[in-house]
Image (cartoon, rainbow over all chains, first blue to last red; front, side, top):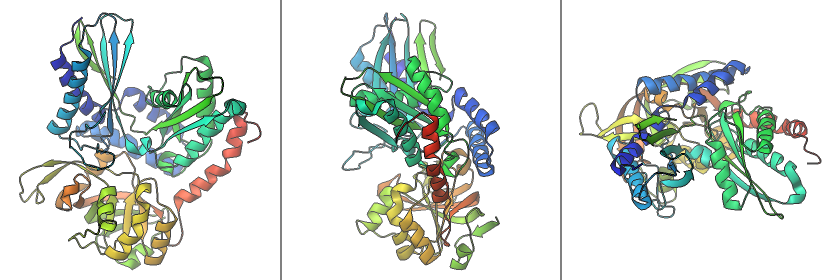
Length: 291
Length: 204
């Protein structure tokens, strides 16, 4: 299968805008679920406003949140796809720039030391682009995630030691949720990376934080941790916006990787309640948008 | 718990009467301010031509569209999406905002800390919590971008909005030492041991 790069550019533009405006169905269902179980009056009111905002954004075709985030594009390429990798990256960057200029969107991206904003949502190594390969033959998919800074500013890595065991992982996650308080715009999805190298561990925490609600870690050890930790962090009473209540997190998601005999790394990355993402899938049938 | 409708600007007496868990809705002028705006104002000696005495500031950097100046768009900007950012990063600016510019209300999300609380107590200020991430709704409360200053910092310019029915916002920090965040946080830390025990963590 050949992929038209002009179409990729167009899709990358469209995806940024779609992600900012339409919340995925699993997140909307997550809101319904926690709204039903919430017992605190303030928290109920806060959740009510968030749910109302989702409707207003759709009715007015506006952005859910003003934070256009740091743009992330996750590309998955099937075995039979023929594509020029370098030009693919250029098309993604072009699409991201065009979304920013043509909608227009607030460019939230600046140089790290001069703080200069190019007003393109792009800069050195941004958008973040991840490319992976899968066996499904005729398929190229692009997932777009505008990662907001309120949640991203609450990211942690701890290189614990093997002697601290899994208790170090559990304690760290609980302490990160306490540290974050209302700053991450709870209810959050708490993403936890366990194992790997330092950079892989942090990457896994981001993969976990941006996974759809209802999905499970495909490592049974990770899945068990998810269930235990989801219960534990929602015992703390931080609540929506850190103003108290039962609904601190929609879920804790865990991703694991093998690690070194001397290492026990754990990373936490959070996703805010505006857990935005959008997907475009190219197949021989054409281009399809979804989540 | 009482509700107040404020036409901006307000007197010190009006903000001093507010207590945690009261709600406030704003009408009239609201200033939008952000990290870079305040770094330039307080670390780099820049001044704004706006008179912010008795006014409210909101921690924001909006999505806007450049348009021709007109009666509808006096600043040459149309609002697209206006929402609120995390306040914690801007903690050290609350005091100079109040002391040097006479600001009386700070609107944000996630709360501020001890230095802001002290400034609120001393000068009669409050922190109003808005729901972060509810920007589409918040935008419907903004009638117009009336003016803009320090616009080379765009989108972190100093924005002058005209708002109508902006709220209800929750009084989360008052000038009497009341602070919803520290209250919730202390209660959450009290539950830490039980949460770790439920996870089977030994000897923390």
